[in-house]
Length: 165
Image 1 (cartoon, rainbow, N blue to C red):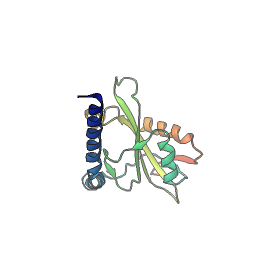
Image 2: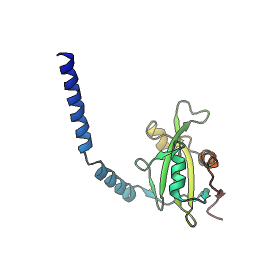
Image 3: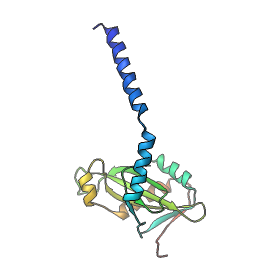
Image 4: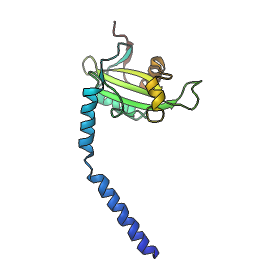
């Protein structure tokens, strides 16, 4: 095949492949998966410390996104009342070998326009599904410390609180 013919063939194949992927009903699949997540994989909000942030969720979410927190709705349990769900990859703690960890953050409506954020550290479910499910290295305080560092980089007023007062 001549080089020009091969180039035309490859471009045509690429266009066909791209149009196929664009034609799939991704929005419908994501909506169905989200509804299944809420119906079959829901839990009550954990009764553990959180950060009360005096800023709207949209601003907090944008700030965390610029610090590598990506939406994590698709592969996590649904907690009743959650309005934010994101995670970022972090190095694993000493003693956990090559495991890739993540700081997982969940947000809930707070007082006024504010938001309440809870975080934990755990093995990344995409890289280490078995360890993730087994809870290897699961650590609330490590996650809260990482979130605290990210929040300190913003101009938000925030305080650590406990559900008991």
